[in-house]
Length: 88
View 1: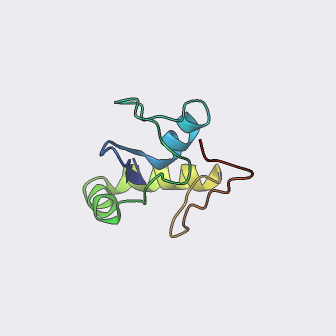
View 2 (view 1 turned 45 degrees about the vertical axis):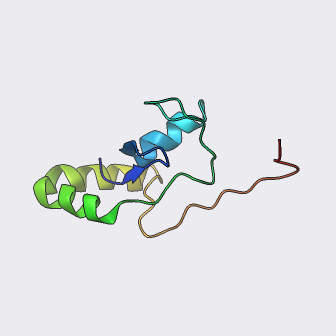
View 3 (view 1 turned 180 degrees about the horizontal axis):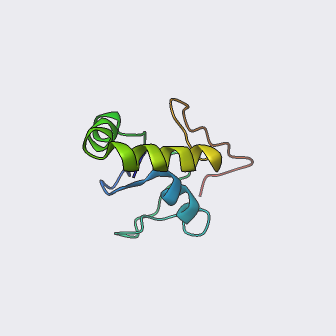
């Protein structure tokens, strides 16, 4: 895990894995709580630094893999656009 995020429900996932999952299911994989695409959470920098310190080789391998796949967020912020009426 190179870019750990925490959902609003408190469960933690790899950002790129969770983004792929949300293309199919707009809910938390653990508790199935519905999630909004604009509320994915931010990368937990503290946890990311801990992972990088403890597993430097694996972290760099995963980071390079995500960069090559154009899935590395880095310092960029996630912005989701909604078109039309999204109110229920």
